[in-house]
Length: 193
Image 1: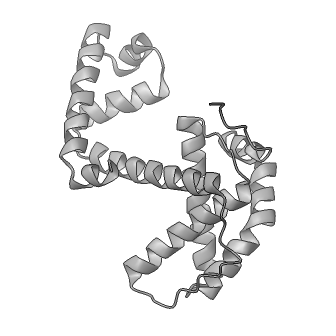
Image 2: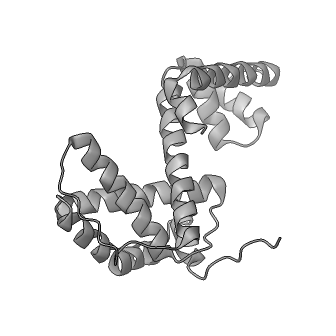
């Protein structure tokens, strides 16, 4: 079975990952009006739409940076599905009703459905990680934050004024503690379906 071909719109994903202002501006100009219109037709306003668009762009940026997101469908379909899903979830949480599902606006593109689903799972996992990370002690948080930024454990140890051996051992213990906290969370089981 052959691997799926990257879509030409991968440039939007790469541009977001590189924080390219030209690409970000192009996304807003080209794709935001459809999102704004959809949200306005479904119990929202332009401010709600801007929030959804901004949160979705941040999610895509994070996934592109961490998971090297590979777009195999049009960006328009993928972006719209993510924004739509985020808006419908917000409506559910706030108990606002009156949702119009316009079949002309929905996409039948399987790749877009799969990618938007994967991005939603990524977003939920990231939120769980962030929530649980805050439960760690300060020493663990400082050490793990340093390892996220600095690749070499020797440099991490120097930056924290600790020995290399202690940094390695402490990192292992902190990751173990973080893993236990994540697995103990009720949200964890809901993410592994």
